Image 1 (spheres, one colour):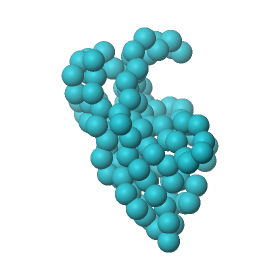
Image 2: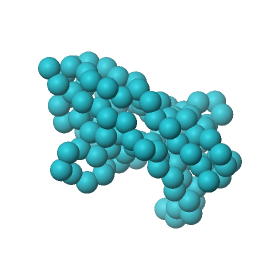
Image 3: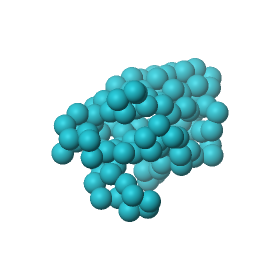
Length: 120
C-alpha cells in the first residue's frame, strides 16, 4: 500500500500563485508515475498532469505554462507549482500514484485531496 498526503492548498487571488506538494510513503518502490488530478464543484475529476519517473507527461492543455509539475530526487514527492491562477482553477486537487506499464495500471492510489480556491 502507498499513502499519499497533500499540502499547500488554500485561497489565492486571480493571477496569484500556490504551491502544492504530495508526499508518498509505504511501498513507494511499486510506484513509477505520480501526478495531480482535480475536481471542480459539480464536475468530474480531471487530469492535470503526471510524471513517469522524472518525465512530465499528460499535461492538460488548459494549464500548460501555468501549472508546473515536478518530482523530488527520490521520486516519492511530487509538487505542483500553480501560477497565474484563474477562477476555473478552483477545485479539490488530488495527488495520484500509479504502477503503470504503458496504458496498463496495476496499482493506483489517491490522496484525500486539498482545496484550492481562486477568488478576489
